[in-house]
Image (cartoon, rainbow, N blue to C red; front, side, top):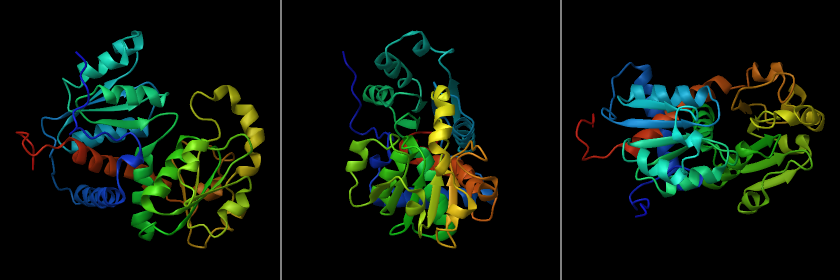
Length: 315
């Protein structure tokens, strides 16, 4: 008997799983939870809840933020790597989803193929969260949008420049432009453009160029990412040559607005995609951005996992 996802189960596979109002409420809640934490207030709505964290890709920020977030909300997180599970030994994704979702209250997956995530979600009885795939990184965008909101207010109507590879971060910025209503200018080398279908879905919000100076002009936010992501190590030397003109330097930042912010999802390679003067300079908010992974994901966990009828919750 096939177990399909119950209609009441809400997943977070891309930013498009949130409508604009939901997304804004989530960011506001993330900042509230951040303030609770800073005041030392004990808030534990997830007592008795557990989150399975499936990692096929290594991680620092994703693992620590989800694990710490569950602990701070009173729940527990279970780390699962391919070496530790039957997924790594060839068990069908559908079977793993059926089993895990009967034992835990939510599942976070960080993997390579986006299809792995969507197949798992189709057979899960509990919310599934995208901790990163090769196609999208929506949790990072929640943190980025929260960070901009805290420093500059609404991003709606602002101009954002994404410089570098048309990768999962670029795809998620395209989706963010649709959800949060900003203008996105993407600059990447020829042959490294974002997925044409994802870009075509946002014709009013997004512009593509191969000139980083044009993309950054009058931008309110400048964003970049590594030139070679996990799984692309063999292409590193070639990419360095192709991306050399796409480094975010002080000269490039000078073309943006004087109060423009700089973001990077980390880890960063100083002297490659960004200069040390920029990432360690006054316009950089990368450390707030990294911390906000914790708070944005706590808001997401609260939204997806808490059920009012669940006994033992702190609500």
